[in-house]
Amino acid sequence: MKAFVSLWSADPLDIGGDIDRVAGHADGFHIDVTDGHLTPQLLFGPDFVAAVRKRTELAIEVHLMVTHADVWIGPFLEAGADIVTVHRRSTRDLPATLARVAEGGATPGLAVETHEQVGDVTALAGAFDRLLLMGTEIGVKGVEVDPRVYGRIGEAVALREGMGGFDLFVDGGIRRHTVGLMAAAGADGVIPGSFVYGAPDPAARLAWLHGLR
Ligand SMILES: O=C(CO)[C@H](O)[C@H](O)COP(=O)(O)O
Image 1 (spheres, rainbow, N blue to C red):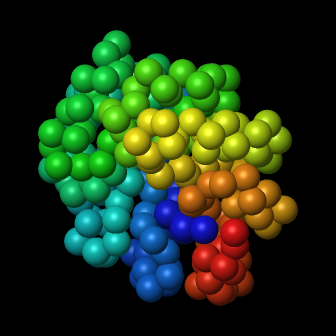
Image 2 (cartoon, protein in one colour; image 1 turned 30 degrees about the vertical axis):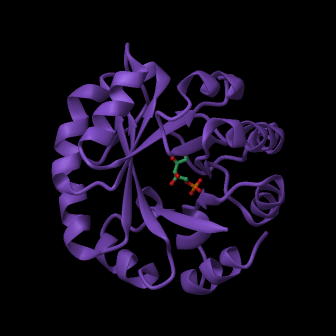
């Protein structure tokens, strides 16, 4: 099981230190971008991503939870994002938005929210390389996973072979009692927040995560 660690759950006064603490153990970092409109939070802009880029060579995923994704793809690519993940609700033309990410040299990611149908992604076969399946509502943290997520992981796994393949990650509600079930259902990776940064030994927790499947 891979882990892209969510910097939203790092210590906001010591994010550099928190990056260094897990850098030899994480598979990448996940940076949430919210606009207070699509999501009830204000989080992380391109300058922040550029600063993280200078601090680590690990992959950076930018999770765009904003009303107008197209406006922000360019600035986040320039800042050094490796993966840009967008929502259906963030654009009027989802294939064009995903293509813009790929044309910019980054991996296009598609987020599927808890109220959306997993099966709807089949129409976008080949347009994205990462599926970010939300385990909770977007723009919240510290909450429990929606238990329907395990079945939804299975649905995505069943679909992906016929779609040319994609990496399947789960975001939200990553806990000791949920992550093993996510791995067993077929997820390739998760986005741990407090599960890593709230642990007494974040590196050991990541090693434990890597051993799952
Ligand atoms: O976007 C998120 C959840 O939707 C973030 O990944 C968040 O950092 C998770 O927080 P936690 O695992 O601490 O609840």
